Amino acid sequence: MHDNRGPLPGVSGPLLNPPSSPFGNSFYGAGSGLIRGGLGAYGGKLFGSGSDYVQSNPNSATLAVLIAQCFQEISKYFSDPQYYFQVNDHYVRNKLKIILLPFLHRGHWTRITEPVGGKLSYKAPVNDINAPDLYIPFMAFATYLVLAGISLGLSGKFSPEALNWQFVKGMLGWFLQVMLLKISLLSLGGGESPLLDMIAYAGYSFTGMCVAVVARITLSYAYYFIVLWICLCMGTFLVKTMKRTLFAEIRSYDSSRHHYLLLSIALAQFPLIFWLSNTTGNWFF
Image (cartoon, rainbow, N blue to C red; front, top):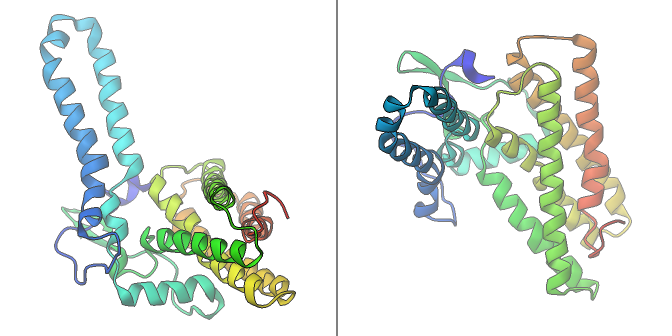
């Protein structure tokens, strides 16, 4: 999807304000080396050692080209993990406001581009409030598990097994959300968006789920009204984000199908958030 916008995503140069992440600087700088650098090093070693074999066996050239393209596609699919952790306190505060109160956002929803190496590239989250990040989803998911443990403890159902099931539910819900967004893109003729973009957008739902779990712990029956509001806010946020940020780049456009898919994304938030905010240690309500 991003082929028509230049290399994606990332910007060169030092950060304006490094993220204050509990993972530490080692984790912050390691993602790119583990995925893209690792794939590149392995691919270079593989093809460097096999160049003589390819030259002496012309029939194997096609296979070598296919393998090279495979490495390139994997690297492009995962994008640059370091890009998604270029955040600061100002970004986090404003992003949480947009996620939890999307109706109050008066700015645009499209991402900002800048010329890098003669091509357009998206600005990092620290410089663009509409850019996806992985810091908030990871922190929200960790907070969600902590709140789930507290809820289980208050109800007298806490156990390592119950908390483990809650973790599995959370990961499954995250996966289902990613698949929903990805399938929506594929059905509209897109699908080139990096996987980490999808993981980031889907993971924002856990910020709303944290609020829902707190409401379930402290407000008893009022929880149901609050979780309905959270579902509405998360559905609105994802619809605005997908419509302006992702669907705008799709080359083929079908207005009716476009609207149906946006509606399905919004409606899917209701059963998903109700299910995941159920912290009783059971798979269902």
